[in-house]
Every structure is written in C-alpha cells, then in structure tokens.
Image (cartoon, rainbow, N blue to C red):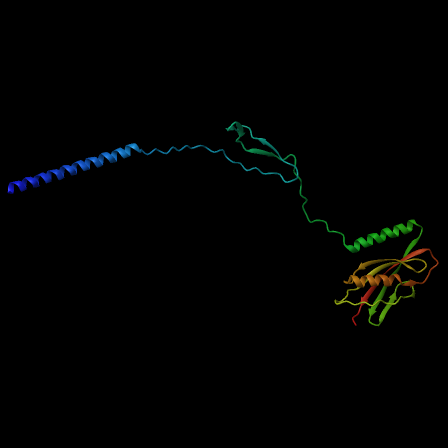
Length: 233
C-alpha cells in the first residue's frame, strides 16, 4: 500500500510539472505570434520649407493698384494648373490720392449769406437806375401795452395794429432788414436774427410789411434795420 501511494504521488507530481512546462511554452509561442502579425508601422514625417510671406501694402485712393510678380521666384504646380508662389509687388504710380492736411474751411454763416444777398440786390437796383440809401437802425420795444418805434432817418405815417404774441420761453431780440420804396411802402423784409419762436417771427414780419413811411420825391429805395426787443408781461 505504501508503495502504491508513493507511485501515485510521483505520477501526479510529474504530470503537474509537465503541464506547467507545456503551458508556459504555449503562452510564449502565442505572444510572439501576435507581435509578429501586428508589427507597428513607423511614422513618416516630411519637412518642407515654406515660402516667406511678405507684407503687401495697398495705396489709398479709388484707383486699383497695379500688381506684378517679383522676379526670381518659382511657380508651383497645383492639380492641373500652375500657381505663382512669389509675393506680389504694389505699384504706387497710379491710384494714389493725396489727402488734404489742415482744418476744413468754415461754412459761411447765415448773416454773411444775407449780407451777400443784400449787396447783390443793391447792385441790381443801381443797374435799374434806382439809387439805394440807408435810413439807419430803428429800435422797437415790445411790451404788453404795445410797441414803440424810435430812431431811423425816415418817419412813419402808419403803424398797423400790433399782433398778439405769446411764447413759453423768453424771446431773443429779433432783427429784420427792410426795403422802403419812395412811396413809403415796405417792399421787402429779411430776417437777420431770429427770436427763437418761428410763430413770433412770422407775425412780426407781417407786422413790418404793414408799416407805412412818409413818401419822398427822390427815386431811391431806402434800407434799414429794425430791432425788436421783447419785455415780459
């Protein structure tokens, strides 16, 4: 019995060792086959020199600048076409517009424009054979009790009823230039300085047109300036 147990133990021990050896060899064989079947492909890297990029400045102006290829540069083939890889030069011979330097000229004021028109009218009157003279400045003070005219070199013979005026804001002095015919009729009224209220300006112009000055024998058209000053009330 003892010999039989020893023999069985020896048999199982030898079998275990052989199985371990066979399993180890089989594992090594399979791992080597997998690595051989799937080898790692090395990465290929290509270095290509890029052409130098130069800045192209365009000339200011409406004209289109002339572009030309620089000499000594190559041509690259792209698909079926040949494309120039060289930077372009800008010709500044044409298309440049000089920008004026300095402060812009100031626009003429309304008063200057009116004075120019008045002088032009005076020249037209002189060509027609009618002389023009100035009666000076007339001051008109407007108050709740009415209006008072003073000054000037020509007396008034009729003053129309003064219109009713109202304004929520204080009114600035109103200045108008008038043209008086020899008969004393105001033929023309021109606003030089506004009061700040268009309604008041329109009523005052209609009032001035109704004023009658004394008649004169000379064939002259007289001009003058009336300044209206408004007092509250």
